[in-house]
Image 1 (spheres, rainbow, N blue to C red):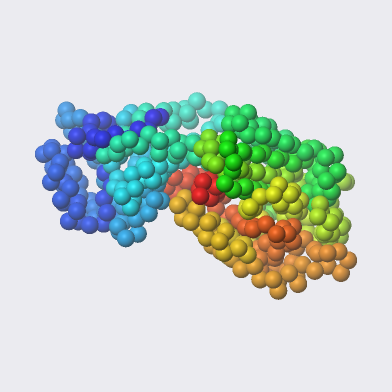
Image 2: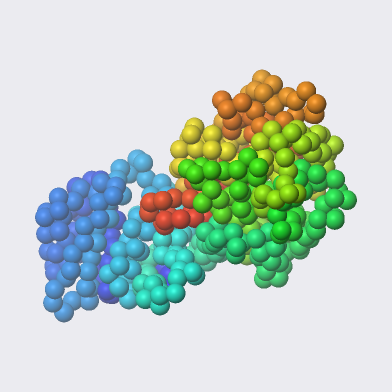
Length: 492
């Protein structure tokens, strides 16, 4: 499928499927229709009248065009109020149109949408992202060849009324390759995406895009004192992998950053076993933080900003065996802090503890970690919004701007230091979990113990990394959440 921006406007375009976006303004709709040629104007005026189309968000009436005209089908796309119009409105509208064109098996499609803030480049990029993400189909594990046929359409999509926007489309496609990699990593089962498979993915990214890779094996992690991370891996037959992927620009970097992703490729809960109804069957996605980290690395490797970025993943399985970590055991992290284990199902923070210590040793200017860390965050914010914890207002503002641009929702949560009382242990420096109230806050406070001086933010993405319902450019399953926010943050 090819996406290109062309000068031709909807009134002059010819092809199988035409889409035109309208704000919620009947006067504007009528004024636009009068500019069209007579046959197309008549068809659209009838469609507006019959469907009572008003341009409200979510409206998408379409009709066939009879006769020998150059357009076979046309769709009107409601954009809602102009006051609430955002870049994500463009992504959603583009996704709606692209999916309709695919369902109708249109070979060629043309889409005309208004600009956001008169910014042709940003508008083109957002529109292209919506198309690319909406049309992605993960059919790797299906044996039915018929499942592949819908992906053949449309062959090309023209973004109408735009000129000289090839660079914006290329940027969108580079970013989307990272999002789609993340989707496929998170969606794949745990017998496919293992710690070694994550390391192999990192190696492929390094080879394809000129990054450097270091993978620490168990013995090397032991030498660095990574007792918290290694404690999680004790029961698995699969070896842990500590992955450090680095992008460096050709010149002097204006900034150095680290992105740390939770990489638990399957989480059984350990001896605190997840039981029926606890979601154990979905725990292949407990590495979504690492998936987003590697997806961001793939995108950054193509975009090549003047920023040095360290991508860090402590990859392991949390399983059960005679070697398993036990409730009551004490682990020592690489910064010397001791941890009493009171819940083996709070394992992600243990892997992140050593990863954060390692990240700070790289001498970076800021660290962001992301993880499917707590069910408590989903209870607080639902499935559409991720939590953000940081003591740094400036870093919170950077991430908020990056997420707003991406259309990915975050909400800054409190780092209430008083709640650390719930993590205190009588025999170690801390326990790995606190009381149930404020569980996502105490998890963030736990991670904060492994940062000394570097500006740091923790993103709990447990809710938005997976969806059971199709929504715009998000298809059922893994969403690729946070990749575009991370890329925007780095590009800054």
